[in-house]
Structures are given as C-alpha cells and as structure tokens.
Image (cartoon, rainbow, N blue to C red):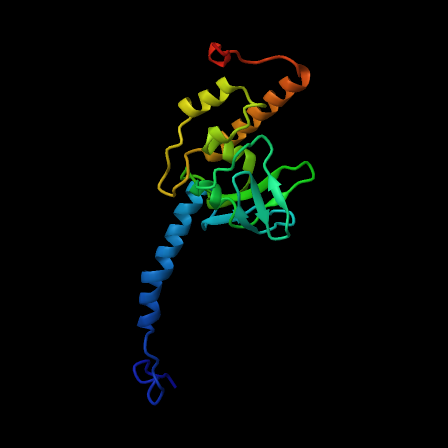
Length: 209
C-alpha cells in the first residue's frame, strides 16, 4: 500500500522551529566568531591576552621615608644609586602596590603595568618587573646619587628625557627608558671603580672667594 505523504504525519506532534536559537546564533555566536577571526588575523590569537610576571618572595611596603622603603617584615631598604625616594610620584608608588622583591645584591624590584602600544600585540597588558632604582632615577633625576652618576648626566636626563604621560597615566616607553637608566648606572659605577680618585667635574662656583 502506498502512503500519501500529505497524511503520513496525522496524529503526530509537530515540533516548532527553534527560532530563538537561530536568532541567538545570528546576534551572538556569529559576531563573536567574526571578531575572534579578525583578532586572530591581526594578533595571532583569537582572544585578547594578559600576563603577570612574578616577584620572588614579595614583601609589602608599609611606608616610605625620604631615603628608604619600610617593609612589612621590619626592614628599611634603600635603593642603590638613589639618594632620595620620589615619595610623591604616582608612577613610582604604583610600582609598589604588589609588594617588592629585595635581591641579595640589594636591588629592589616592583611591578608596573605595561599596556600594549601596537594593535598586532595579542596582550592587552602585561605586569612587568621593573627595578625601582631605574624607575626612581628616570621619574625624578634629582633623586640620583650625584656621587656616583656625573652631575652633567643627571642634568641631561632632566632636560632631554620626555616624561609625558599616556591615557593610562604612565610615561611613553617607560620600560625602555628605565632600561637606559640601568646602562647609565652601570657605566658610572664602572668609571668610579676604574678611577676612584678622579674628580669628574669642576666648577669655579665651588671655590670660596
């Protein structure tokens, strides 16, 4: 017997089309897939990324004096190459928020957030390790110990280094400029070690009349 297709489903419950899921796909899933694809083409990652570098045994900074960090474990720590801390500088204070790592060599490290400056970078931001002596010296060259770093170098840093801020409140290219400070410190220290008795600068103003 041949069944008429028009009457084959008599008595059966007909399912309704899932229009809600169809609209959800068009409104949510497909646009998200499109955005992920565009992000993949631009950055190599389908989703934005972020990362945090770690501090070894970080210690909370309870307070600051003009010359030292007061840590939660009771220590008072000075920064190498720095005679005075930039206690009112917001960028420097930001680097202390996650605590600090104190190395065996006396160097002190904090964390600073580095926001991406290139659209091809998949990382929206990275919390990066930064040497606090480098950061303090760049943000306020007057804090640098002039008995180690020549006065003329400090003057050049004050006059010629840009500290203009981006919309995140951080100087442009902060990490690379801080790395430059490390080079200046090491070069100055090497010069002192090689010529401990050489007077590096001379001014008639220093002579009593």
